[in-house]
Length: 429
Figure 1 (cartoon, rainbow, N blue to C red):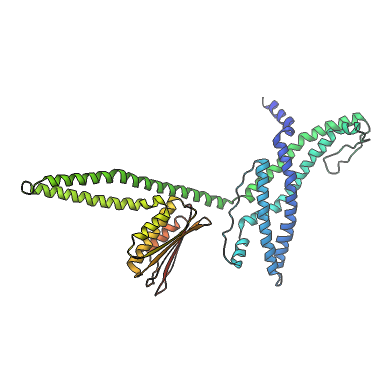
Figure 2: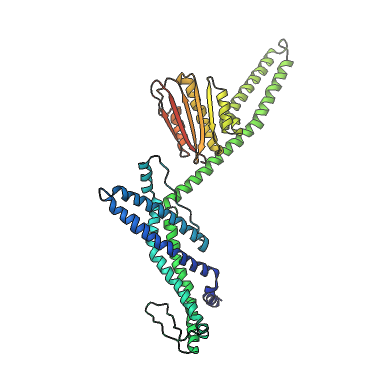
């Protein structure tokens, strides 16, 4: 069974859609490979590197390098698209460098872009492979021309030549119709081999695309860890929210009913008949009330109900309950995930509590904004200043909580004030 199947696979390979798609891929990818090699490897990288070694050419050389890296990234995008559309090879785009303010910082970020440099390496390795792929496509063309040799003879082409796919194979003329049918047989043999040549070239290019045009091993590991962490953080937030609902709808309701029942029992008792029993009931009722209060505080710590309406409403509610005037400014068109909302709310609540307790401020401002995949929280007061991040303190705890989601907290608090605390968090953990 295996031998007939293998023979059938060989005989029908040139008729399969995969073989044609691979041939088209080899043909289309040659032009960007050649252009990219000339513009990127020769002009941008080589010339740019030489210019950077000179005094007068340092700046133009750097510009050549930056332009070459940008072009390499664009060429990598094109090659990934061709690979996905024609040969079904799906590769994610490598992470782009973080945008930095300033010309020098931006240029430095571009030069440190490992994804772009790996695209340059792909350009260097791609040209020989693309040349091999173009040679494989030539087998298709030569095989097809030999197959139709009898038609060429009948169409009036005298002494058509037998085309050889091998370099230096010669092109002997065909002097008879019988010879053209022999050329047809040879053309069929060439067409049987051509799909496997293109498949070999495409297989090598697949490896290059995966190795150089996708995220590196470290980037993939970082991405996997980020996704795992995001799932864990969101799952923990959902569990806390569910626990808060269970406490609110279950234990708190029962404790409230118990306190009311004990209150009703107390009213039915007479101090003259059973004073000790009335005292026990009052003690039990007070304990139930205190437990209910503690449970409510605990449930608010798990998930503040104010967050159900969004972070903007929660901050407004928090400011309204503060012991000093608080101005809230919100520009957040993109809503973060519940876990990030909870973290931002706790940061704002802790910072506002610090302002009230320690700063001596007469007013405070809270600014919230989202954009570029980032949540920015800014708390500013007009107090005495002099705040610092002490080990084991509340601010240090906020710094650690922000770092768990790749966020950061910065503090600026000179003596005499004002104090400004900025918190930056991703919209998604």
